[in-house]
Image (tube, rainbow, N blue to C red; front, side):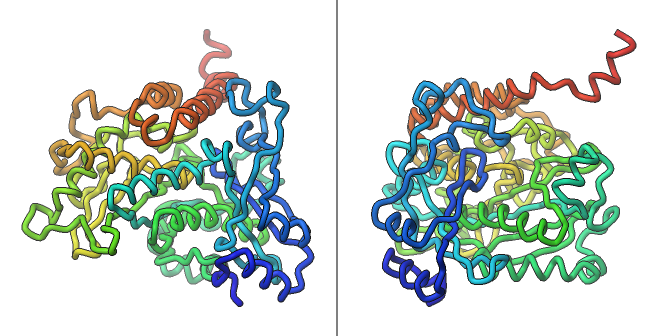
Length: 455
C-alpha cells in the first residue's frame, strides 16, 4: 500500500506495520500556518487513530516566536494551558522523503478547539459552500527566495548581506534552472513524493527567487498541499545547507513574495459555473457576484489575507501587489484578476494574497467573501483598464494600511462572524493585535539613523 492510498484508520495501521515503523510523525498547523508536531510511538499512534490524542493548547495561544498571548480567552495562564483534543486524519498519510521510509500524518483540533483551528474554520466554510450547492476548486502559487545560508549563518549576519542562491534578476532563466538543477529537481521530487505536485517551477525576477504553482484541486486538499509545501520545502532546502523564506517582503530592494490563489466554482456534479460565453469576458452572473463579494469584503477580511506586520510592506504601488480592492480582466495590477477561458479554465486569480498567509485562513476568506456576494447578488465595481496604481478608487475599496487597522475592521465585521464564528473572530483578531503590539516595542535601524543625533 502506498501512503496516498490510505483512507481509513485500519489502512494507517497496515502501512505502519508493513514498513516496520516504531515511530510516526504527526503535526497540526497553528494560527500562523506553522506546523507543530512530534514523533509518536507506534502504540500511541494506533491508539490515537481511534481515540485522538491530547496536544497542549499553547500552540493556539502563542505567536511565531513562542511568546504567549496575553489577550486571548480560549487559552492562557487563566486556563492552565491544558491539552486540546486532536484527531488524526488517516487520508493525510504521506511519505517523508527526507527520512527514509518514514510517514507523516496531519492532525486537526477537535471540539472545542476546532472553533479556532485554521483547518476547522476552512472546513466550516466549505460546508457552507456545499449547503449552497458549490464546490471550490483552488490552486496556490508561491514565490519564495532561496539563500545559500543556514539558520545559524543568518543569525550571525543579523539577516543582513545574505547570499542568494543566484545573483541579480533573471526571470524565467533556463541558464539558472539548469545550473541549479539539483535544487530544482530535489524540490520537484519532494513535491511529487509528498503529493503536492507542481504544475510549474521557474526562476522569478530577483536574486534567488523561485515561483512554484501547486496543482489545483478541491479546497481543503489544496490548502493542505499549500501548507505542507511551504513547510517541507524549507526542510528539504535546509538539509542542503540552504534556506527559503516566504516572508511577504524580505528586502526593500525587491518586490514582495506573492501567494496567489486561483479559484473557480462547480456545482455538486462537477459542472463549471464561472463561464458564460455570451457575457463579457465569459463571466457568468454567478462569477460576477462572487468577484463582487470578494471586492466588498476584502477590506474587512484583510487581517486574514495580510496577517503579519511584514504583509503591509508588500502592499505598495508599483511592486506587483494591489493597493485597493480592484478587479480587472487579465490585469495583473489588480487585486482580483479575471482569467477568461474555456468552461473548465475560466477562473479568478486572487492577487492580493502574499506568501506569508496561512493557507487555511486565507482560503476561508477568499471563499466566504465570494459566497456572500452570490447570496446577496452583488455586482462588482467597474473593472479596471490599464494601470490600477495610477487610478483613484472610492473609499469603500481602500484597504487598511496597517495590521492593527485590519484587525479592528475584522473584529467589527458581522459577515466574518456569520461565516467564521464569534470565537474564531475574537481569537484571531486578538492574535493580530498582539502582533502589532510586539512590533511597537521594536526600535528599528531606520529610527536610530533618522533620530538619534538630530532630534
